[in-house]
Amino acid sequence: MMISSAIWMTAHSKLFFLVVVVFHLLLCCVSVRVCVEGGGMRSWRWQFSRMMRLCLRWCRLCPKRGGRPSKPQRKLRELWSYWKLLLNSLYFNSLTNSDTCLDCVFEPVYWIVDNVTRWFGVVFVCLVIALTSSVLVIVYLCLLPVILNTYPLQWIVWHLTYGHWVLMMVLFHYYKATTTSPGHPPQVKSDTPSVSICKKCIVPKPARTHHCSICNTCILKMDHHCPWLNNCVGHFNHRYFFSFCLYMTMGCMYCSVSCKDMFIEAYNAVESYYQTPPPLFSFREKMVHKSVIFIWVLTSSVAVALGGLTLWHAILITLGETSVERHINKKEIRRLKEKGKVFRNPYHYGKINNWKVLFGVEETSHWLTRVLLPSSHAPHEDGLVWEFPKALTRRDPMTI
Image 1 (cartoon, rainbow, N blue to C red):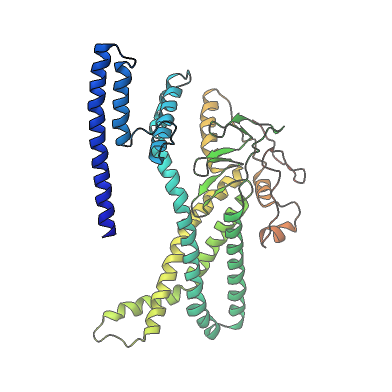
Image 2 (cartoon, rainbow, N blue to C red):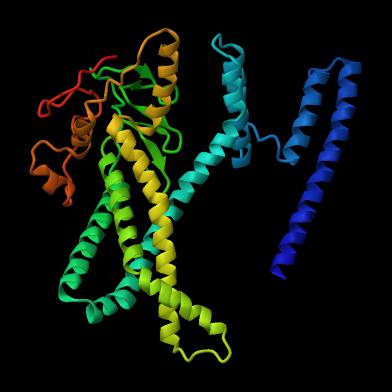
């Protein structure tokens, strides 16, 4: 009753206001005629403006004088101002070309892709955690008891040592890769040398710095934006990202090879479910069979896919390049080749030295303490200035 009465009052109040507006319009028409015929104080333009303002105010399209516009009106005005500025910047810009116009046309598509990728990054991180946790549960509940009960002592020690070492490295590097900032150039004026100005951030860009449209900021030594980390891969977390890919591939290969025989037995057992009469398997045995098949298929698929990605990044690291620089350098190679010149990557310190720079290896013992064990040490340099590390020895000359 209260809702119906409120609706009734709202409808009748609007109807009453409409009657008042119509009555006022009639009076305004009469006053316009009087003003026109009798030369009154108010002009007919003022009266017409008054009538239109009353109509628009009733329709809630024109706010009261001195009043604050509603939220939808502010949004529409902001959107109109943005598009007006965009059109003016294109029309009155001497640097406008077909590529710039095409980028502006596809700007809504870029916006949708960037925001969807940013939102799906959280989903991908949750998916990585869920799948990794499911593999651990199956290993501890199904595979580990078989290893402890049937394998010799030396193989038990090997599986426990190697498996837990890989697990520790995977968890550590994934956590560090997702939580470590890739690095950003300073937003204030500084003496840091820069090679260009970012068109979106409007700040100087140091060497090897690129803008990430998903993070909406510039990244030092940007490699790519990884949705599985929900983070950019840059100067300060490149080592964590590659180490995670490497150890995750090693872990998946280890699980796939270790449970191959159990997978064949489980697959044959599942195929026998449809025999007549079916074999007598308990509910627990059926769950073990399906779990072993799941873990083998999952780890084998991830080992192949992630192994290919790891191999690709290993090639880039050997050449002293990132994923972004790979495309830039290929274009530069073709451009200089047409001029009869040869391009040399200025950040290629030598194949072995490139790996030392990535992992932060300065002494021989660092291969153990910084590569084969978890380490949170900072990388070489600060990502703003790139110079050859003094602790390393260059064997091949660098030419540009």
